[in-house]
Image 1: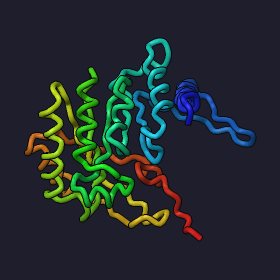
Image 2: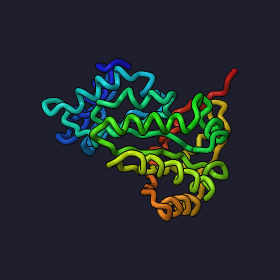
Image 3: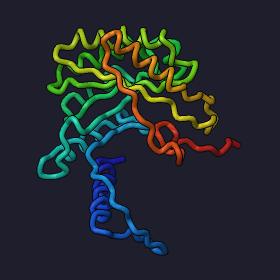
Image 4: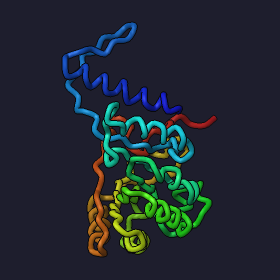
Length: 244
């Protein structure tokens, strides 16, 4: 998407929210749907199947306009750029952007990370160094490390210990940094699009993972799932059509 196309999505989403407050309708050529009151849009996250670092110029342009006081008026802490970090330089693309950086890690052990993120071409140490170098040049040094927890794959205490050791290097190396681990219970897509059928872990295992991180001094948050009833939650936007 171009910068204009990204901003158009936010513009029209805000318009729909505004119409819902005054009892407006959504109209198309053959339908007219009444709108229920919708909550205000307060946070923006660049993430998902479209890798923000692969479209950095357009994303930077959108962030610049979203954060202007005379325009969309979103503060830097309300805009997040989430990346798998295709290269160590991916973070530096947003060094001057008014946003929070989030790194989709999923696992820090090299072989497991390559299994979960097949596009990985650099070691985790190289990617971590890229993040730390970027944070040191930013005034906003809050960052998130994201892990989609999958049953029997990356949700054991072993992985929690490895993750804690990995991220504490960031906290200790970057003065004034604030790091949060976002734990995301995997959203089952049932092997859609030819993918391996990973499974959502039990909440007991998720909480055990979170508790272990906190015992080791890492702030960890379990993210609630939204949209899974319609198969539109994080990671579920995949086709279920079989390949011919």
